[in-house]
Length: 319
Length: 139
Image (cartoon, rainbow over all chains, first blue to last red; front, side, top):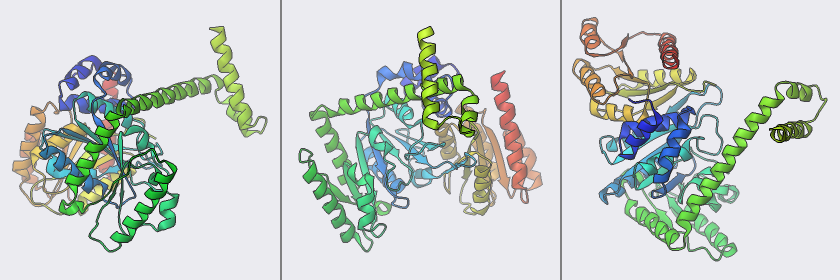
């Protein structure tokens, strides 16, 4: 395996799996070769539809993803999957088990599945997920599925990444109050009630429709949000969901929103990168002394931040 | 937290459905700060090889408790070489008779842990291998 960023970039642009896999490893590990690699592939991005799949633990996100992958493949589309699972905040280790439910696609050259640990990032994704999606986009996959960790009430970073966000719910998990609290209800483009053969399906569906009805009243310009049913473990409901995802893309493109979402995502990423870099530089300037001063109550946290920023300003002016 | 965690694929080949061992190993490796990717049961060597490449793991660990490993493991080692992934460490564990050891090592299995192995020894072995690998890359 060539270890040069330019070489790996060239090979992944031809669709070579091992090169794409190595690129994602670099981005995930924050290897210094990552930025050069992204710079080389970025002009080739912007075509793939990024589909976020999120919902509570046990909703069947991986099984649903498996079913959708099969459906897309039957339509001749190439699909990449980023499956995110939580890393331990204590050891950094992780059990990444989403592949288990997608084993039937293991030998399909039109399917690339990559597991990622969150590696300390809150919000349901890893820091590298955006960049990994760009790699798959550059490799020419038509669809990039981003399956988040099982989320609770406000881990909705995937909304900022995906063109189309699917919220998966199951009967009997949450009561009305939970659904109201959940920020994820405000974010979805398509809602799916999975395990729809279970008791409580009608009640869950009614709750969702009520929420969406209220949401539509406050945002009348938005088109109606579909609520679909599936029994992913039996392969039921895949065609309707895939069609709704395609319809959502068509609608985004018609309104100019497909490119706009790409632009917003890139903008947010630029801001985050600048934030990270400035933070690192400011902390480097301040050293441990500033934290010692905070510990000793000689300065408060806001004052310490002000102090670091002033130092940073002075250094920029001096340069 | 380790900036660059070791990534380990754990798999079972063939019709062997004894999962207790591989599950315990997986949790031990997670506790040691590694990223552990499970592929599920009834995998063919081709499936394991494809997953190892896609996941860009450093280590491929195969648990075997119902024979067949003298055919499937050499086949996996060959597939990994053909895929240009021979730099990945190939480790096998489980019920592996002593007389099979030479065949497997000859075929490219880097290390064999037989029944009764202590998870701490497995972790220590992988940690040391990873430290050496990173030192090599840095050099």
